[in-house]
Length: 336
Image: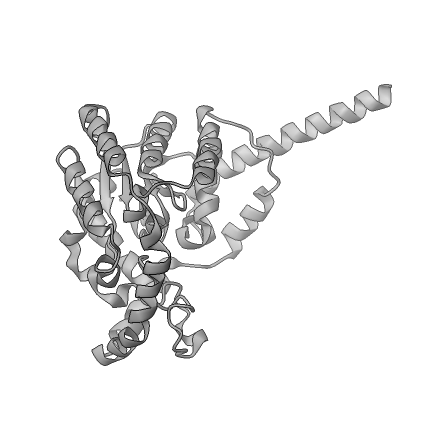
């Protein structure tokens, strides 16, 4: 009997120590700003889980949204020489309504200076019920100020953060150099090859989705009625998508109507403000794998052309645009 009590006590003690270790390490890890800590494209899901599960120290500005945010924001650019942290918490296929719920949760937990909410056309489609249930379970973690999450990944995280030399900024600059070296004919040839592929993907998948216009408008109306509660903290980002998507996605015009309606109550950075990013080259080769594919003509299948997500070069360009637009807010707490 005494032995059993000893074993149970030992397990409880080890659990407590491991969780305390996780809490201390993960809460401080992003402040080292090295390795994968600011690599949102590779570490996006882990980063969002950490933001929700733990209380990240010095977290001052948060970008939330769906996959268009983690692929569209270069955190290295934003955090350069900055004392306080900017991180992303992006969740795949999150709905617009859940974006607002996530805002409330993170705002209560961190009280940040600003929360940028990325918008995309997909957020206004009728949500998958299973994914909605998953979101509620994820958000429930945010009801606690400092939850101890029983995870053994801290040691792995430490090794990754200090040994992985991935730099999204360096990759972006290499990709920009590569893209600038290609002439218009290079991209026009690709266009001919992928045009039908893109139309087929949109027709067979994205254009089969449904949208509840009444529900979307009612939710935006209620948001506008409570704008004073949110207005100083929220900045909405209409994240750029390529022309070939905008012209073929049947709900795109309706989405832009929602964006315009939101802009009547809140600050919205409309994608039309940066027309440069309509250029197809900023959606070409999202993961910078062109050389590995050796110019394979199945561009879409090899992720060489993306339906709607910015590549490294696009994210670098868009992030610098956001930085210059909100320089005063973002440059707060800069090291001199």
